[in-house]
Image 1 (cartoon, rainbow, N blue to C red):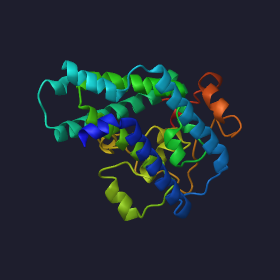
Image 2 (image 1 turned 180 degrees about the vertical axis):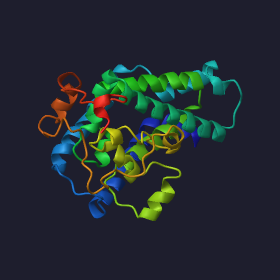
Image 3 (image 1 turned 30 degrees about the horizontal axis):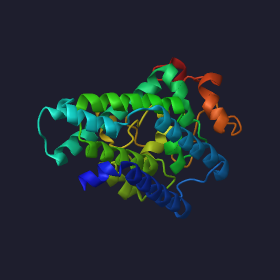
Length: 280
């Protein structure tokens, strides 16, 4: 199984992406959490357009991806985990936890540094919250994220299969926790012990800066508890909260071309962490 996953990594990830995407999108139809405010066709054209552009850019411009680097690191003995011959199952657990912690810290960083926030605004500028929001990122931020991930893999030295499992889990949970799906309160409470749920992450997409700067976790919820960034519910409730950024409410401005230009054409609007004008 390990060799199959490594050999067929692109196919495995593609199948998992489309399977989970279709599953969450289907649940959104039959059990939506909120009514959408913008036409799905308009938003999905932008969000999925970014997915295609980002995927092509990474494949064409990045000479080695995380799985390839993990394979190279294992062959050369690079990284902390290659010092000892760990069982694969243990490497998977360690890699998932460490890589997820790095993603959390990266997420805090792009909210804290105004230059990086300009890139990350593209993700938050979506006027609704659904499965496609989880993949709506500026191309330059994708390259930044890839660089951080490659550096982490190089230092950590996880098995290639551990990186694949982490990538699949991250993509799956990003689509799940951005899903416009209604979960029973009891189930949501239990799931929050092990994974970021849609209701938990939706708070992070509130128009209010103090709520935008909370619930940074994508996969594991523990980091928000540990570092004090957890917020259980939005101040106005999920039905009353407004999604997006207060400074970008025109759907025409944040379409595909507008989203790509947003980092240089827009303003940060007081959202970066520790900005006095973003405390509301």
